[in-house]
Amino acid sequence: MEKLDLTVKIVALKGPRKVETSYGMTHVLLEGEVEDESGRMDLTVWNEKINDMKMIDTGDEVRLTNCFVTSFRGVLSLNVGRDSDIKKAIDLVGDTP
Image (tube, rainbow, N blue to C red; front, side, top):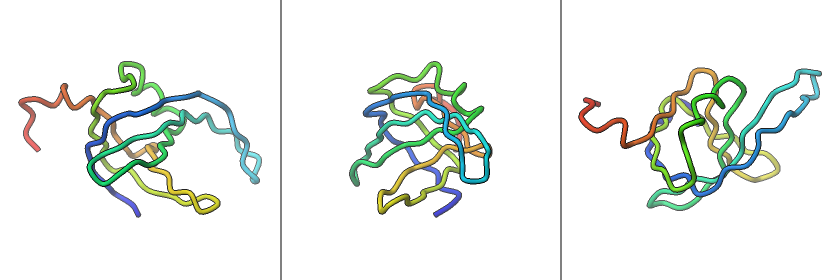
C-alpha cells in the first residue's frame, strides 16, 4: 500500500541502525511500533527522515503523510520514506487539512 496518510501514537522507538541491501546500498533505519484504533504495527523510518524524529518521543501522536506499508517475512511495517512527512499531532492544531 502506498500514499497513506494517518495519525498514530508512537509506542516504541529503537535505533538508528545501518543495514546493507543485497544490492550493496547502505541505509540508516529507525525502527519502532505505532498504534491507532485498528491495532499496532511496526514502524520503519528511512535515512534522512530520521532527522524529522528528533522532537518525537514514545507516547506522542503523529501525523504521517505519504507513507507506505511493506511486508518482510510476513510482518507488515509502516514506512516513512523520502517522500513522506511526519509531524507531531500537537503541532497541527489550527492547521487546515
